[in-house]
View (cartoon, each protein chain N blue to C red):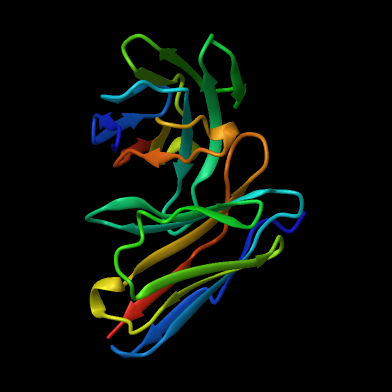
Length: 111
Length: 114
């Protein structure tokens, strides 16, 4: 079991650029979650999917953020255009019965 | 709504005990506990379900008071490896195992010193 795989691990980009974060959930897990973690706001849920269908995107901060899950083994979180306040660690997590398994996260820095 | 954790931080000596609390203003279906070490991802510790069932860690215990919407995590005879930030996560409107989501508290930073 390779766990939840996120890429890239680190991303530094300039303000205004498009950023795409990727996630491969654990095989057999039917729920996928995108969280953002900052010192000020802690772990915030952005969006989650059940069986590849978006269920709740109320945590997505602005229209600049979008997420897709085209199949059970892949999801993306896109920020376009990126802004310095988007700097954070973005975690993807997947779940089947109980307990979330988190990926290692993507540390995004927007300069 | 985000659950509230207390204390925000605690420092222990090895072998000492600690209690971390988590409370919600909304009715809960379950409470989940995670530990995050610096620079790493949160790791699942345990889940407490309505009715008293627990699943998870065998060296850390917890309680769930459904009526008060509160949970407590008990760390006994702490070890250096217990250091990290502890988060509780709660599902409020839809049970987590019926397609619901977890909202996490702000975290409690635990430092265990030798």
